[in-house]
Length: 166
Image (tube, rainbow, N blue to C red; front, side, top):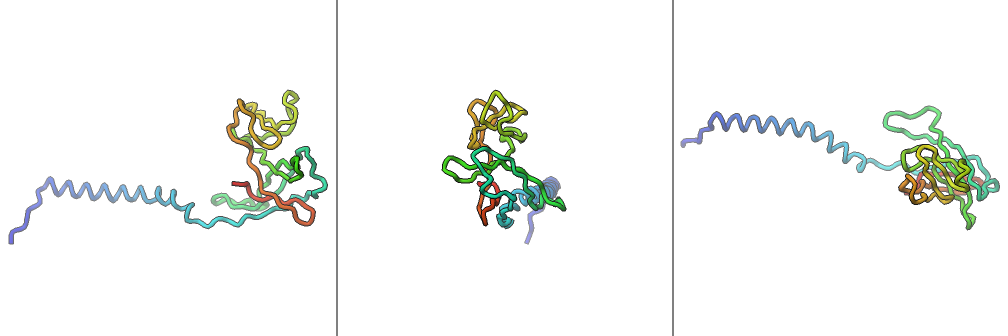
């Protein structure tokens, strides 16, 4: 039985192709894992934080409330937690609403009624972004999305703030 001989050119082609495939798979595996890993991880349980604010003190005027959460960000987890802020108010129907103060344009902090030119609006001083009282962005201003809303819950006459609604 006579076997087919492999020429030098074919041998080099097979060898270089195999080496290139091995190196490419070594580079692609971390990229695929990076893309797929978040899908495979279990989500953390949504925890509500008592913001030390009785419901009786919440009015229709937005009030800044600070609270601390404990979460791991990559490898970093602050020992004393991470301090966050929310704008808390009651809407027209009496429901409690908590809005994130982070502008959806470039992440600056919005303030309530801080610009005398724009009364009863949230105003972002970085790029003159504006939001209505309910958190919706004013058309024609830099933000293209409304402010994020936190989930809220009332327990024992006190306000609890949860994760951002999705």
